[in-house]
Image (cartoon, rainbow, N blue to C red):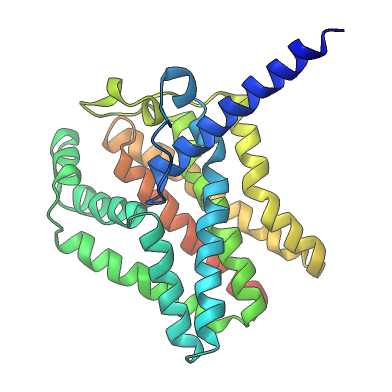
Length: 267
């Protein structure tokens, strides 16, 4: 047995996984990464494996902000600051996608017109109204929960909602003029990698369900499955596939659905 060869293989595998994770961090957050991080087709097609783990990090940052400021301010202010923290950690990436998707689908008349509106940096009435309502639902949902449930809910929602968005990559084609240039979003995730991402995504939910022995938490799955099926049909019919904006919209709506389900079973 050639131990040097085995160690070399393990080392190469570790470096490869590190490149994948750091590229996920670079693409989906504003967290700085080392300058030696690079992306190619081999790395790019694997990046989304760690997308639910990004949910762990964003959720962790959000809950840390809530925990710290809940000792200095009332819970409502701490919740608002935690929502702001999550948005800043991603550069408002998914919220931006949600708002522009609402503009495109609300104002557009043809698939091409809808996509053009989505890509416009200006925010319209549909997007503004939808974003206000979305943030309001987030705040009032979290405000109802006790601190422990709130912290776990944020972890669960940020992780699992990103997997629901990722599932679009597996079932729909990506549509954009610059699609061939972007390995991360243009390359369909392999089913084995999707399964790995799913394990990452459901880990906080299963852990909390076991700790609390509250298996009603699994009721989050039916509405998320229905959302995936509906959006898969709707985006295919309206656009012919999905865009970055659709990805962000799916993540945001999934996050809100998880909040609402947990509120429903906790009150």
